[in-house]
Amino acid sequence: MPVLGMGGLFFRSHDPQALAAWYRTHLNVGGGCVADPKAEANEWVWQTLGGPMVFAPFKADSDYFAADKQHMINFRVSDLDGLLAHLRAADIAIITKPEWDDPVVGRFARIHDPEGNAIELWEQPAPKE
Image 1 (cartoon, helix red, strand yellow):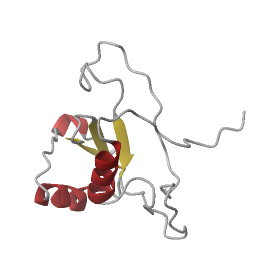
Image 2 (cartoon, helix red, strand yellow; image 1 turned 60 degrees about the horizontal axis):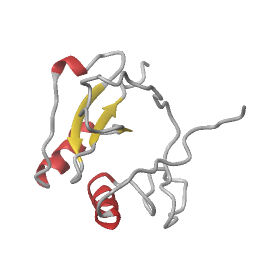
Image 3 (cartoon, one colour; image 1 turned 180 degrees about the vertical axis):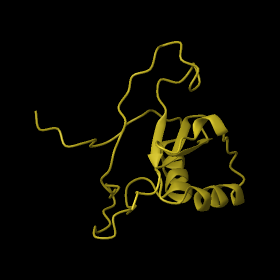
Image 4 (cartoon, helix red, strand yellow; image 1 turned 90 degrees about the vertical axis):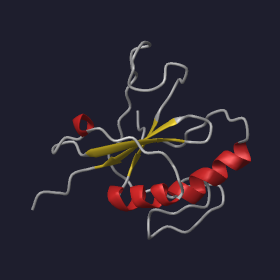
C-alpha cells in the first residue's frame, strides 16, 4: 500500500471559523499557511515540511490527555522557545514538564486551543554532526 503520509485531520468544532483563525494566528497551521519555503500558498491546504510523524492509538483510560477528548494533536516545531514566547505574549497557557523531554526524542510543551483540545508541541533534537 503506497500511503505517503497524512492527508488531513478533520475534527468537530463549536465554531469552525473562529477555531481555524486561532490555529492560523497562533501556530501558522491550516489552509493558506506555508511551512515549506518552496511551496506556494493555497487557501485550502497547509503546506507542511516532510518529517516523522507518530501514529499511535492510546489506551482508553490513558491520562496523557483529557479523558473527555478522543484525540490530541502533536505538531513538530523548529523553534520551541520562540513559539512559546509568541504564545505567552498572546496569553496562551503553556504546560511543560521536565519528564516529557528526552535528549534522544526531543523537547515538548502542551497548550490547549479555545475549545479545550490538547496540542502537543514537539521540537526534535538537533541533528548530530
